[in-house]
Length: 222
Image 1 (tube, rainbow, N blue to C red):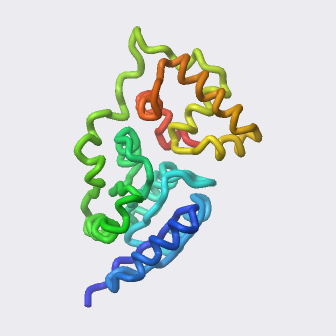
Image 2: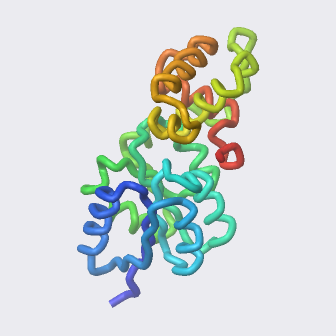
Image 3: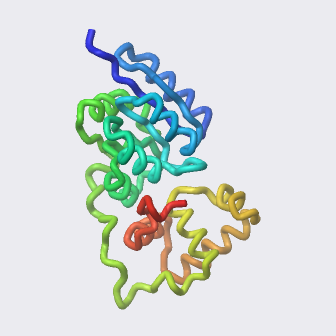
């Protein structure tokens, strides 16, 4: 029998972690070699385990998935990163691929497609969830930074900028409120005010604006 695919897993949601663990352990060709519940725990775990594939969530405490991907790509070149996320907007895909990810899988597709994605990435390929693959390149992350008709982010207050940036990075209002020690209502107000100033009506537009202005680049994430 060929060597098993060694996989490490990082996700801060216990139910998701348990479900993915069950899927991986059910395949005799895959060996789960490490788990972490935050990005800051995941990095040393991946260094120590040196897995073939690291399956990582995007929104995690410590290091988020994008920054974790960049660090793994730089310090563990033999480990290939498969991002597992709830975010279906194509604007997330390019920054992650640019950071070094080799796969992008939606959590709702994991039960059917996780093992296929792990094998594809372990074999040296690129795996994109079919739900985002067809339009992943339709909204490039490096879009021109503003036009005469596009308001500049300079119109935002520092707190409005921080809130909108974190919204785009996938954090919930509750998570952002906890980070800044504010109420959820205050975060909703900052978000609404910032979106109105920039003329952004939907979450997808916020994400695309953030991607075009470098807010999703790994070095911009804190």
